Image (cartoon, rainbow, N blue to C red; front, side, top):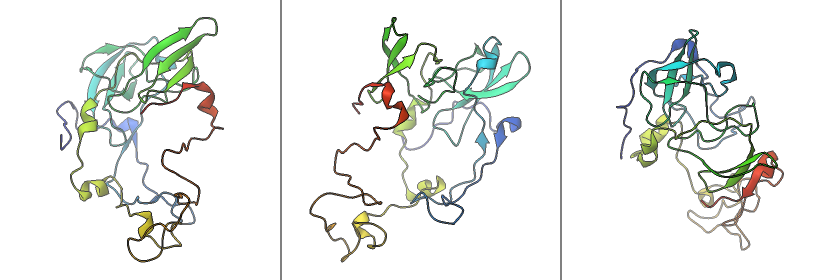
Length: 244
């Protein structure tokens, strides 16, 4: 699959009341220092405000008005018209059709009554692998193979996100990467010494280190080394590590 398939879209323009222009910082801070390398420019995009918290619409039916493209996300988004007259965007699930009547729901949230934060990419889904009635915990297997525990009061949507063929798209040329705001990468050992610990010497020289590879900031990053912080707040929810 070389390009994108837009045959499932039913609208060419977004709902104006649910959009806003974010702009671009050039991935630099207020001192004009680069905070994210190899990123610059990109096509102008209009941000769609997607609803990840449907608690105030839990008992109000809605009808799918259109299926639209979102430049900030890999899955499609659906415009819902509620019975009370309000309109909202949600992530489009697999098999969605214009005219379907739905009730509230969204992707998986980490803590009860917060917002949906997990399972947002195209074609993704999670699987309930078990539950503990005594503690009120649900064990869910993530797309990466990692198993996490969730409170039974967490909300989630049943089903799978659509546009699952997105993973088969081939970029094809460097120009398409520039449209997405990505600049060409360069090997660390081809940089200057001031730019990276591996930089310096002549042309395509070895990294000059007999111990291990280093990151941009000089920290050890040997092959297969875990970079996740043990102090991250969500580590306590992990039951078994990822397999992919």
